[in-house]
Each structure stands twice: as C-alpha cells, then as structure tokens.
Length: 149
Image 1: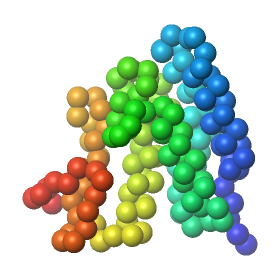
Image 2: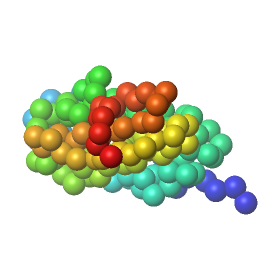
Image 3: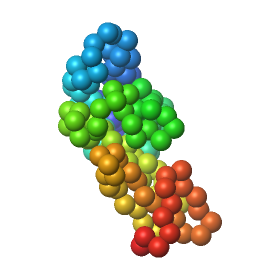
Image 4: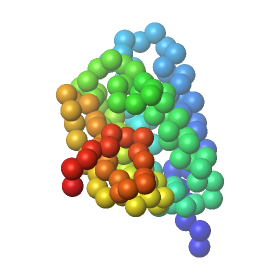
C-alpha cells in the first residue's frame, strides 16, 4: 500500500493560492499574519509526514510547494526574517511550527544525501538559526560551525 500525504498536494496548493491572495490585501501586517495562521496549521500537518513527503510519488513537487510557501512568507535569501517585519515570537504559534517544520525537512533532506556530524537549532535575537557542521568534503547552505560537536 502506497502512503499518501494528508492533506493532499492539491489542498496545500490551494492553501498557497489563498495565502498569496491574502498577502495582496491591504491589511496591517499583524492582521495579515493572523489571517494566514490557520492556513499554516493545515500546511504544518505535513510536518509529521516528512518520510512520505520525501519518498512518495511527486515528492519533489510537494517539497517545492512547502519551500514556495516559505518563500511567500519569509524574505530570501536566508528566510529567517518574515515578510511582516515582526519578531517570530510575536507571530501566532503556527509560524514557529512552520519554521520548525522547514528545519526538520532540511535536516531530513541533508541526512538523506550527506554524512552530517551534527546540527543545532536555536534562536538568536528571536530569529531561528540552524547551525550545521559537516564532515570533510561536505558543504552546507546553512551556517557551518567548526568545533561545535
């Protein structure tokens, strides 16, 4: 039996469309964040299904969709600052859960493709930071920390 994501890819795609439409409204940032939070609650359901997300049929499209939502809500290139200009701790809990989901997803992807030594997730000035140290020959898009482990 093939495991499938719940909610479905189509549901999360529809949620992304709703997020994008909501972001175009002229609401204050704190109100916008509150309106979008219930959408993230649904997206965050995938955080308990990361193996299915990475291994299932259409996994690349599903992962890309999650990262596209991250791109809608957080500023590139590091995606640590949200578009609302508010500290992450001041946003509804769904945002902290979403950031945690992103880091778990990145961790699962890197574990699948590299020999990682250790990583540490922490908050620095109320912003999430993923510190990762890889063994020789490996690189990371996240902060590399020598001597952390």
